[in-house]
Structure formats: structure tokens, C-alpha cells
Image 1 (cartoon, rainbow, N blue to C red):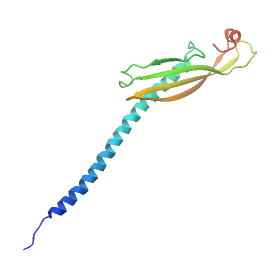
Image 2 (image 1 turned 90 degrees about the vertical axis):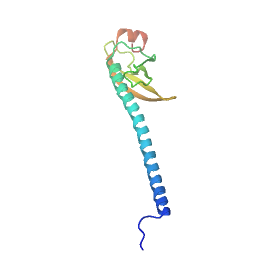
Image 3 (image 1 turned 60 degrees about the vertical axis):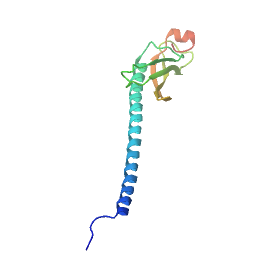
Image 4 (image 1 turned 45 degrees about the horizontal axis):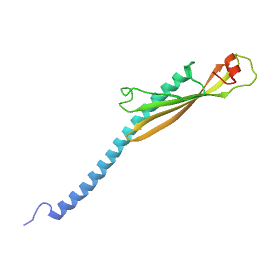
Length: 143
């Protein structure tokens, strides 16, 4: 008489192979989800950084040579603690030129966010042109 079916040993080996395959798959899925969450935070910070850089490049009344900073509302940042720090410095300023001469300023921006207990950050840099004023000449630096 012929017996059909699997032996207990065959079932155990097949179960072990399946368990190893599922464990590997779940591990890869978990890693992918963590990476996606981290990239989402980075993408959000990058977008906020681009927006802030645009604001700083357009702004005329920002402190020069002195760092200034701020934070974003948690509703905008997906409940992450996120902020920025900026500084405007002269990049190219001719000496002994009259008011109205075009000068070049560097805008440095650091965007940071908290990823758990760890602070993450990246830096952006932009340049803008403006006219040198009489006050700049008197002070020896862009306003």
C-alpha cells in the first residue's frame, strides 16, 4: 500500500525554510520603512530650508554679520522640532567706491531638526546683489 503526504521531517524543514524567508522579508521591510521615515523628515526640512533661503535672499532688513535664528511651528514640520540659523556676510565689497556700487553678499543658512535624541542638520548657501549705501561706506561694511 502506497502512503501519500509528507513526513514530519519534511514538514519541519519546509517550515524552517519558510520562517527564515519571512524573517528576512520582514527585516527588509522594517529597514525600508525606517529609511522612508528618515527621508520624509529630510525632504520636509529641505523644502523648509529652500523656502527660508528664498525669504532671506529677498529680505532687505536682516542683520548683517550677526547670526540670527528661528524655528518652525510643529504643525508645519510634522511635529518635529525644527529650526534654522542664518548669517549674512559680505562676499565681495569693493573698497573706496561711491554709494550705489553693486556689492555681493553671502547668505549662509543651517537647517536643523531633531530625529529622536539626535540633531540632524544641513547647510545652504546663497548669494545676492544689492547697492552699497553711504552708511556701508561709513561703517566699512555692508549694512
